[in-house]
Length: 604
Image (tube, rainbow, N blue to C red; front, side, top):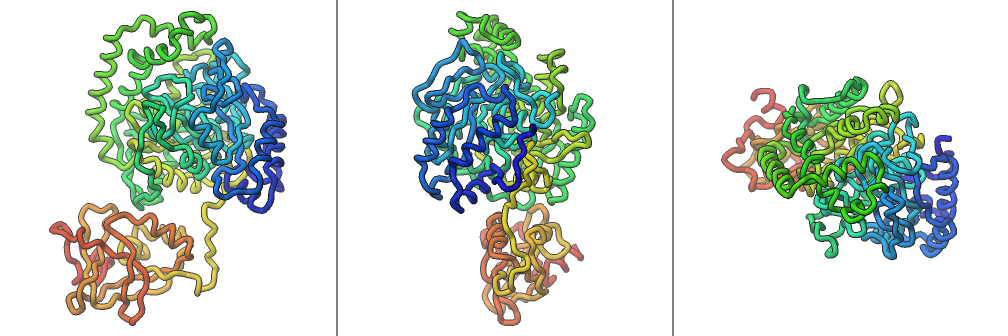
């Protein structure tokens, strides 16, 4: 049984469930479907503890009628079992460590306040140590796509529950890649927030200085909806940060760093290597600029994670329990933690010094691009392969993840392809802390471009915007474009992708001057309004967009460009691109004499 839904039932993405509730659907009906799907999937390794069905139904009843003020109204979710849920045991996949908390972890509290319903606690690599998902004394969760493969860890149960459509989203944690690797191996989205964006109060730490709560979801929009609710400063969490509100506005053309060809490692998985190449081609098709970056220093950072300071930090998190009950630990986990007992304070400081030196080396590299795109996992591994080489293969899975939190970066793993063998391929977008929204915007575009179904459910991706290309002309908005959005120019596809309709070629009134802006990629002009008789007519195009498409398009316009009212030579006017006067400095060339951007480009 795969857990696939029938089409008469709503898919469990948040938008579909919200629509179901808006039309009078019952939360209790969805709760019953959740428990039916748990039984149908029949994987005892996913959940370590289920919430009482009657208790969840009672909580659903208390929600009452659909409340649009609760952004997660009636949305079922699961919680990794190193995160506290009041009344359910927290074990961190170590039965002898178990306790029953009286209060929710802060992040769980915020989600429940927004209307979400906890379904249960999910399996994990013990004490969140591992990227494989098989280091648990409980039954091992089966990979949702192919049960012969490892599910990925440490947040294995949360990822598999989401991939099967049992829940709409699930919480994991991420120290070395645990919120990204299982997402990539199960064909779902994994959002690893900026460190400190989500509270870790009520979370059993792995490495407290590096830990963050992560979000698994079927779509980027769902992951972002959860992030938007949960990203709140927490005075009780010493590592919480009041980061600026994450913006979803992204420049139309991004400079994206990718590992240099010589530095890419796929460990013999040619299908994964080919899929990564296809994802890069998609980014180029979208108009973005790819820059190969030597990745040796990033790998040097990654190697620090399982040496010195951070192994000692894992041991410190559970030192008293480990020293008393070493026998209670999974053999691989016990070996890792036991090795930390030989480390000294000098070893820890040497690790911190090495990291600081690498940070200084990498700072200008990271600043040279808008973001990075790396494979999520270099390859798939079978359970048998992990049993033969448990340490080596775990380390290889973290090739593109282990350095991220050490460098204070945020990330999002996004499915991009189904390989010829039917297995999923994924990339992870990475950026400095605080750029979560930028990653989500590009991640949504990449996921949509893949055309993939969601997880292992067979559900199609929901349409991000319901554009109406055939709507009547009186409901379309005229947009004047003057530069890179002209027909045949590099950014014109942005209008085409929004079902924009070319209307006509036109000219402005003689009250404008056109400048070639310095340092823009792709090159762009700036149209500036001046006094009558001090300007000239400039050739433009008029395109027509639906109101929804117009709003989406305008939201993505980067400074110093903006939208204003442009007077045309025929006496009409329309909204269009204008440039802030402050951008017209010594580096901007006045090209008004060419009469338009197309003529300037032809002669430049």
